[in-house]
View 1 (cartoon, helix red, strand yellow):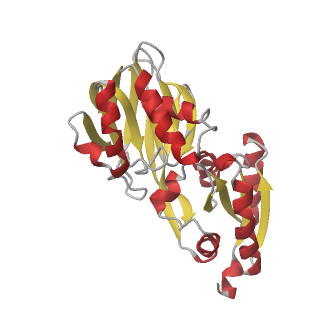
View 2 (cartoon, one colour):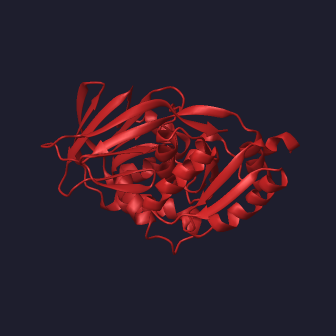
View 3 (cartoon, one colour):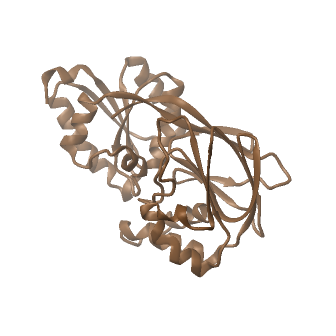
Length: 306
């Protein structure tokens, strides 16, 4: 690494629980390599969401690159804060899924990760703004409602399984018990209604630890990809699950793909429909009788080192 690469300074914010506790170990060699290259490095373990905003304020005020050390949830929690404050974000993927890092093609070895942070190009990527229940938040990868949000809840309790098996297990468990919902989806003002298993509004192609749910998605095109998997039998959905990993599911007759810049989603089922974003729960999707959840793209909202 070149000596000139020490011009950047970094605040590495670590989620100690990411990746089943893998994040603290992942940060050590990268921090050492950054310091050896002459960079100023501060490492802080995440003290919680309220204190995180203060840490980001301080880091951006010093001119530091804020580095997310953890999974997709940690990245999303920092992306909005850094964007709002006019800072620059870096990534050190150390979670269970690392789907946004997969989308960006980031490496998983410490030396290559440090080199990108020191010498990588700053590119402006899109974010999503989701407004639901009167609360607005920014996320990086995708917002979803239905069986996939249920799977995310199961993953959080499946720590007894090896990491590579947690998401497939959760997907099958959620499909085995799912009830279809009646969804209303409006894309740029054009309304559609579906009996569906899930609705995904995607900025990134990947979610669920490698599922290529929205294969045509790009984080730099200013467009949202909307994937609707319509209601089918549980057996049919389970059989089609492997196709999601290579993106071939979009050719199935029960899958609809739409695109636009503003998406409204509401839905009603026998039980409240869970919603989530980047592995974190958002609560119940608004019912058809109330104001919908609104997802909008924010083009070029986040400067990110790649």
